[in-house]
Amino acid sequence: MRSWRVLLVWAAAAFAALLGGCAQQQEQVLTVLAAASLHEPFEELSDSYTAETGVVVELRTAGSSGLVDQLENGAPGDVLATADQASMAHAEQAGLLGSAPAVFAQNHLVLVTPANNPAQIRNLDDLANGPTVILCAVQVPCGAAAARLLESAGVALSPSSEELSVTDVLGRVRTGEADAGLVYITSALQAREEVHIIRIEGAAEDPNRYPAAVLEAAEHPDEAHAFVEHLLSEKAQRVLADAGFAPVNDS
Amino acid sequence: LRTLPAGAPPRWVLLPALLGTLLILLPVAAVLTRLEWAELPALLTSAAAVDALTLSVWTALAATLTCLLLGVPLALLLANARFRGLAVVRSVVLLPLVLPPVVGGLALLYTFGRQGLLGGAFHVMGIQVAYSSLAVVLAQTFVAMPFLVVSVETAVRGLDRDVLDAAAVDGAGRTGILRHVTVPLILPGLVSGAVLAFARSLGEFGATLAFAGSVQGVTRTVPLEIYLQRETDPDAAIALSILLIGVAVVVISLAYGRHVRLAER
Image (cartoon, rainbow over all chains, first blue to last red; front, side, top):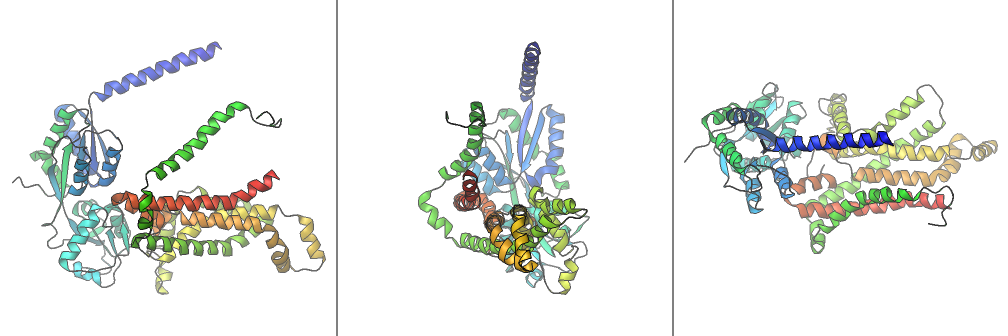
């Protein structure tokens, strides 16, 4: 019996220590929810933000609509950064935002083929004549952008698969399971060793805009505002440009 | 409770058992509360939903048939054969039961994909497996086969050897015994195995997505449609989910209801 009691006391002590640890940590950790395509530059930007302010950033990346879904269901967070304005508008309508969204980066689609370009694709028109083409489904941001682009180019094609994320499109192309795909320039650059990248005329003129905002339920609103400011700084814009994002024009 | 036999469990098991039931029941009930029931017919008759349902039903039937054609002989062999490595063969056949379906999908891709082991051979024959409905059937067969094999093998092992011996003494050939004695006797196990394989095929998601891709009417089955609609039209996703829950309830009562009744007898 005594050993049970001893164990219980130890367990209680450990639990209390754990709680204390959490509470202490909570005072300085900023939770940033960001679109999956932002993962790599945001890791670097979080580090530089921490170096400047001493505030530790916990970065959580996922598909934009998935993030908004999580927030609607009560997930905690201080800053939200999405891959398109539609997801951010959804978050705004749901009353999740504590500040007006600010666009901090732009991204656009490019054509990718396997490195040896087996179907000899040169432009969008070549996609219509039978090669295996993979797109994103129109329900996700990269698919909506692809549909816009193909429509304005007057190209009608039947994709072999409509994936749920841009990384799935890239995966099928880089493994040679498809002849071509439409992906963001930023994703294409991450796989530049394995894929052949073809720029599309007019794509950069019709970009996806990436907005960021402070969340209504933010535990650290001041730090969150500072983080959004940080995204617009010259230094941050350079990091984003290195990842392939186009800078925003302050007009 | 007073009339429970001596081997009955202690009363305290009631609480965890109840919690276990709730853990499963509550989420299912939660889905039901999310649905606008008045909109159900409209949601289930949209072009995308009808295409997904049609595709799901015929691919799952084709996969079940393939499972029967390949799985029953396999089960007969596993139940009767005695050779070194039998245990290994059985483990391999059961692998899809414990493997994450997405791993199965990747494995199929590395086998039947364009760059896959057999991709070149199929390409020569002018057949492209990946991105086709055939890929969906293959993925479903891969994950559903063990359900049929386990069910049939158990049934065959439960057979009364004397009956089979008697048939042999009467001069029946092996194929004759299989057709007129074994199959009728294992029919309940065969049916419940086939029903489970059909249900597993209908619910297949990971292997299909990784291997077959997703195009309306060709490869986008109901589970893939649910996952896609969740992004933009949660109501449509919920309506299809409820349909699958309904099918699952029917399937379980078909496949297991009989066993429970037999055991109670």
